Length: 437
Image (cartoon, rainbow, N blue to C red; front, side, top):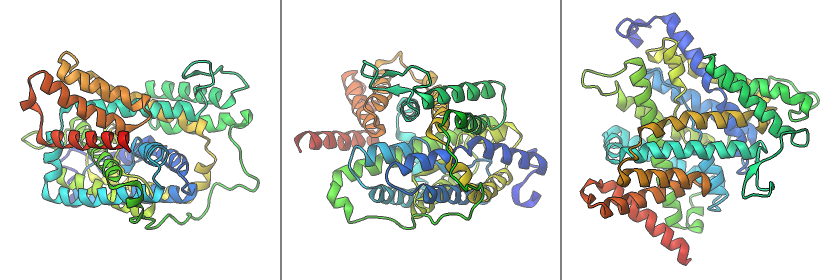
């Protein structure tokens, strides 16, 4: 273990790494329930998505352990799965097979870019304030999804959208609010795995309310269901339009970039995992792990796999090497046989997790420079559009376009990176195409 993971060099021990790996798994295991719940709405089989979620998370995290030697776990990302279902399938009219095709191509491109070191260069060219705004906007978007899925927020309140009355006429909403309170209390008390424990507690509370239903003859253990293997649809791309597919592809591409780099930077800072120049240790290997996980996930039938910020909980518990990721990856494999246990978890129980992750993603707002209107206005538009348009892609599109307009108006066109010019042009062309179609 010492020779493989350099434990002494990073000031850690086997026991610390095991505890850190278990802590990270507990902190992010909620994705095993949330991801199938979201993707199954697109028409995919719940149990098949569960298998894909567990296996892709395990493989990607194990690659991170051995290739990058970092205490960072990966799984299908929140926000990316929401974009998959609610934007690509519901709004754009693409099938889930076409969405998987976009995820596959994104992952393949990421592998190439990671090997060549281009991915890091591209990320550096994206304006910092827009990166932060994307994280905040996705957080609000996920929060609204959680509120709507639980029946807490509704358009049937006499206003455009509002909160329902929390009574026995709205049992799911009441249970979700109770679950959110439990999650908040556990998190404030710094209880490891607070989000997962909140989901479990809310599921149990939902039984007497009739929100959680347990089928007759139910058992918590079972053999894994077969995943949606290689369910791609390349021919369908022409049916939805090349322009629309490019927008889908680019949104998956850059949202994944922002998620991964943000997580890597945060965890590296917390665990002092930087080299003498202040760069993330083994960043190339970490990015490659992310890309491999995405390709594997697409082949199995799930949305983009990305690094999880919940890895910071394992680092806080003492994890410093890939040994903790090895532990987390193996636990995801064990979870494969518990899919019936996760299948009875209702949306009202996963809604508090979505809302709470929204809070965690809101932290990026403090780093946005709102004092400079050429930075603040595009950031605001990005944040505002995502939840109100119910679309991550529209938020990124309008934010990029607004950035170019604001910088040109402020006579700061030289501050606009070439990549941003290109993206803004692509997004503007898509908007014009949709308007005249």
